[in-house]
Image (cartoon, rainbow over all chains, first blue to last red; front, side):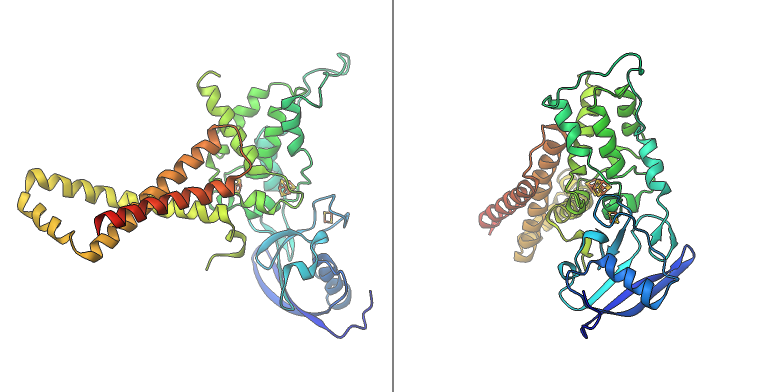
Length: 241
Length: 113
Ligand code: SF4
Ligand code: SF4
Ligand code: FES
């Protein structure tokens, strides 16, 4: 990568804090294989070191770098600039549906509080003295649970969800998907408590199945399918099944 | 304008379902009121029926049938999605329910005009 390239990107970056803010424009040299996170880093290192943003792994593992890029939620470390812009302009803002701390950094507490509220804390069904529960990786339940466990907690689905935007009580796709993995996890104690938590106010029945969560999940999980699973299972319970 | 994060098939299916639902909710009371005229005021009903013979009213009726049919098939799709075992072709199912709804509306239009 060289800085000698004369082509530039016009980048609008949201600057502000919880009390408000606005987009500010920056010129950033185009580089080959440049990611959106590279662009933000370049601005912070070369133009304005007061720009706040969050990242850690830079390889799509930690889930900390999500932002709104040209109106869509994305993991910025794995989003190449040329994949999200046809022209040479880019608009980068904080994730939607979460309180802003400063600039591109959002407060993730409400997101993780909902994981707990949806029954997402693991409760072992046995103590260390009882030995492990044997789990057959090919069993139907385990395969369902495995579909959702690679979540990196990036909140991209949460930012994409219009139901979260309209109803701040709604637990949201990620925490419900976590709950669904536990409902199908033989090692989890009291799985019906999880079902009760997701059927309560703000739970799975609020989902309108628009699938924006699934459309944007960067690791290609399917939270909409998980929420449908919770709806189906809780309704079946009502009928005593 | 539809915001970027909403321009995908299932969100469009969602908004169609919502709009058709609201329009039907507004339509039904009017519909029942007109039906009640048969008992309370037959001359007014006759007047209304003549009005409903107008071509533009036929077009509006077709739009109503379209919304009703789209809402019906869309609702079946959603219930199947939430209550039956999962299928991976949700987008195709959404497109099929809209296509079926449109086909019903076309048939209706051909029949009434
Ligand atoms: S499908 Fe449900 S969880 Fe996913 S974006 Fe829509 S409302 Fe949110
Ligand atoms: S489900 Fe996908 S989009 Fe949502 S938090 Fe997990 S990894 Fe991110
Ligand atoms: S920085 Fe870790 S996922 Fe992007």
